[in-house]
Figure (cartoon, rainbow, N blue to C red):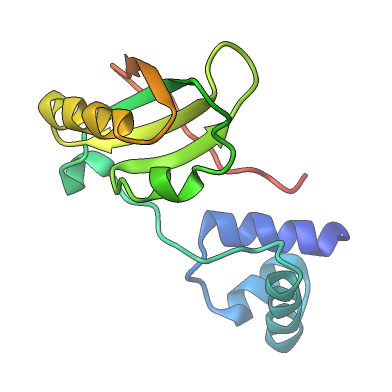
Length: 145
């Protein structure tokens, strides 16, 4: 990856919907060259997907919690079980006192409680420790710099 690729990624993270002509102009390329570079970044897996950023509260998902999941067994093979719970946005196998860390978004704390119940249905889960977010200062994407 060179500086032009990094600049393309930064521009796409700022506005993924912009035309290739604008994208190219921003990084000093033609529209065709920008398109070709973006295609290659996708093929190499650097750009995984193009998406939009939405306000979770506007979609009825205003409750954000991070849940540490304790287990009695190795959880590295349980990704499908975690993915089957739609309120879980992210799931990470971690080192430390817990086995898995999940990011959960729900509309209410009652729905969060239901997610915690469903986590206990996953084989090997022996406990949870939920931290509810009161306010988010910022969230940022990974930058290519």
